[in-house]
Image (cartoon, rainbow, N blue to C red; front, side):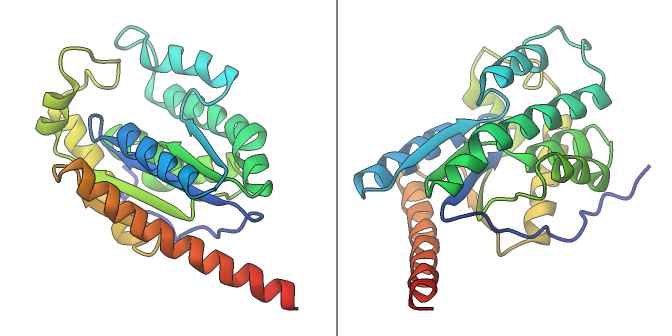
Length: 230
C-alpha cells in the first residue's frame, strides 16, 4: 500500500480573482457556509460565482448522477477517482479558471482535497497518486483558501438525516478515514487551510470565515495596487 503522506503543496496563482473551497465530511455544513459567505461578499460589492463538485457544469451534473446516485458497488474505486478527476478538469477549464481571470470570487463546495480524502485515504488508493491525478487535471490550480469544516462521522450522519447518497451510505469507519485524510492535508499546508469545528454555531463559523477571507482580499488589493504603481 502506498504510504499515506501528501506530496508537497502545489503553487497558486490565477488572474485577479479569489478561489475559496469548502471541504469536510458529509453533513459538515459546507453548502450553508458557502452560501453565507457568498451573500456577504455580494453585499460588499464583489462578483461571486458559486459552484460545486461534482455538478458545477452540465457535464458535471451527469457525472454526479453516476457517482452519487448509482447502486452501491456500481463504481469501482479507481473508476470513481478518475470520474471525479475528469469532472474537475472540465469544471476548472470551463468555469473556475475563466471566473478567476475575470476577477470573480469563486466559492466551490468541494474541490480536489475531497478526492484525496475520499479516494486517496478512505479508499486507500494513495494520497500522492490521487492528488497528482487531480493536479494534472486542473493544471496545478489550487484554492487560495480551503475552509475545512471538521465533523465526526457520527455527527455527520445525524445531521444528514434519513437521505443518503452512495458515498454517504458508507460506514462510519469509512467516514472517519475521510476525516483523518482531510486533517492530514490541513497539517501539511496550514497556510492554505482554515480548520473549524463544525459543531460550533453557524454564525460563529461564518464570522471566522469572513475574517480570513477579508484578510486575503486585503492582501490581494495591496498587491494589485503595487502592480499598478509599477
